[in-house]
Length: 376
View 1 (cartoon, one colour):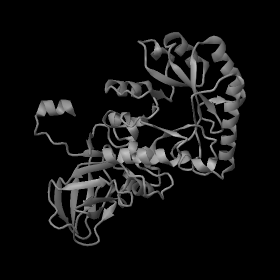
View 2 (cartoon, one colour; view 1 turned 60 degrees about the vertical axis):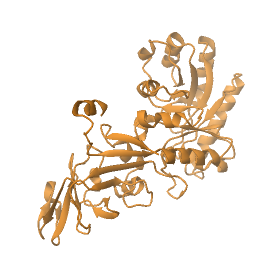
View 3 (tube, helix red, strand yellow; view 1 turned 90 degrees about the vertical axis):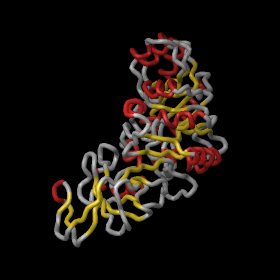
View 4 (tube, one colour; view 1 turned 180 degrees about the vertical axis):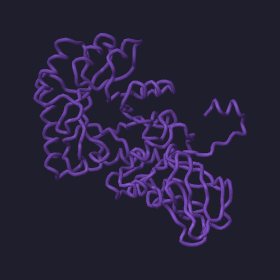
């Protein structure tokens, strides 16, 4: 975006804009930190900070005095390093061992296989590691029955400091679920296995957003840190919280306004037919930029504080909206595609509900090329 502005001059104005509320990010962190004072909050900035823009929000999360900023990949860690983030970075995802054969890296690593342990010992022996144990989700992680041998391998073959023990909930929002209960028990067993080997990690963490919000009901069995993703950005996994404030607003503008006669059809596959004479507007944003195609003929946007329905199929770079009830709708007028008001029809939460999916999916699909700015 900066290169485009340098090329086209200061008058260049992007058609679409993502605005991130700095105050909402800070407010969410303050609120989350008070839920359980025994648990520190480590914000998760993976997947381009859940679509918010890792290089845009990185510095704001860096100013929150968190124990870690969590990312998925070495690439994301480098992105934070480029903007001079000072908070310790924990890489939770897989790192190719070959990628570690480089300069000294200031990162901590989640480990769950010998290959990565060996590579860290060989190329980054100063690094600290967090053992990722599979407590029942059966995704990544060391199986519980294999954990003693894995711990012994690290102790016998490396000089690495085991800084953390971690796992991940499959259903942290349902504390009564039998499999969730088993995960908590397995995590306690993992902690005891490390203790039996003389290891007491500084950081113990299994909770995500849902786990943190329910942490008091887990009776201090979740450790002393939570890796918080969606709640950091104001998305409530329980859909009832009024204290979390969504940080992202996606905006565009009207590109054309024209009349539509009764019986005329709109868009690909002629999926919408006007039931009466009406007024429609074209907006220069589609599924490439993050307007989910499942919002076709179902979703809403806001124009002059009035809800306007999306009509016809969402196209790759354009969508069509009904502006019949908007007084003097005109080219250049602001359109709020996703609102940061969680109760709005076009909030990320409610748009996700229309699409029968999770807010994550809509957030991470907001186009990475769309300009992002922080608003105080």
